[in-house]
Length: 244
Image (cartoon, rainbow, N blue to C red):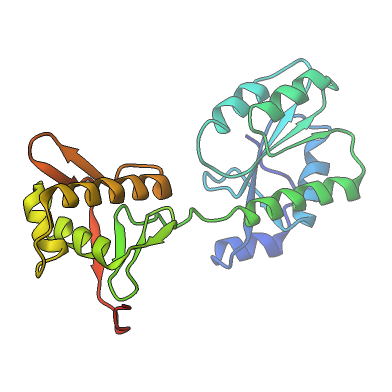
């Protein structure tokens, strides 16, 4: 690692004062290009230093080949600041290898000053545009009781009929315990003498419907015991009245 001579004092003061100055760490000791690279980095708003905390790592890859490519593979294999390789060797194969390894930018040297500045600023813009990890979706289903609407963690949803609603609520209230056909029949039509066979068919049809919508079994059969919910469901009360 090297520290540039003639560091911009204003940038240095901003860094020491904790005023948001960005730090570029330059690795390599080619005395021919280091001052010029450092000056251009300062034009981009970076204070060139050997501080451990860096916002940008610049690797000088000069002939005879040093360890710049090894550094690229090491740095790009873990989270960290952007990595820029400045290629003084003139070997396109090395530049390709660096890009494939995950290098944020490769600059062939000598490079026009305006192009160099544009490339460095482009690295900062691309990193700034990387979206933050999306908030994880809930791992459970949600059932909006007022609308008879069942929503999956993926965002897909479907509506249930009144009989499907009663059957589904019975399975939710069972809290993972299988319900047999007779119990389901009493929940689907408590005021009617619904045959256990009809309840079995209703549960089978609802299971098939939900599997087609969500691509997985939300209701599963348990041999000789009935049906059970296979996913956690959050019941959401609604102000809106239940439709007929």
